[in-house]
Image (cartoon, rainbow, N blue to C red; front, side, top):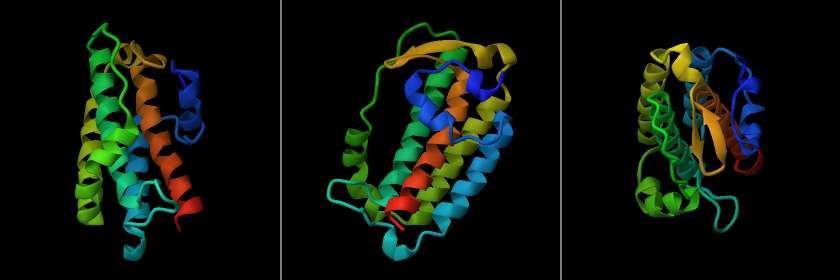
Amino acid sequence: MSFQEGKYPAYFLRYIDKISNNNLIQGLEENLFELKNFFGSIPPEKENHAYAPGKWTIKEILNHITDTERIFTYRALRFARKDPQQLLAFEEDDYARAAAEDVNKRSMASLIEELEFVRRSSIAMYKHFSSESLNRTGHIPSGEISVKSIGYILCGHVNHHIEVIKEKYL
């Protein structure tokens, strides 16, 4: 099964379309390397920059990626373990607002390090899912999604935010 053929709500095609590696584990590892290099290259004077009022800073975007990865891998774990309950949505703007004060005081290096730990945990989890577990599905507020698709969405989500930062912040 390729990532394009996975089960996911149409909304997530915006992330799936940003993936170039069809091998999930290799894609997660390459994506980690890319995100570390990209975020590590952000000039210090841009780290707390938002391109418009009410928009997230680059540090807040990085923290958002980490929060999202945690939430989505939690969903993947529950679905892989055959948990039939539909999971609740999370409001990303509320999370970002609640974390903003702390996040913008942190160093970029500490935020990158945290995301690296989270991603390495995701990779370890995905390495040990069987084919059957990867193909299991569950329900999120926007529809049915497979465990495998969640892994690909993690990569596409990072790529999406890197594109936004390049276009609007740098």
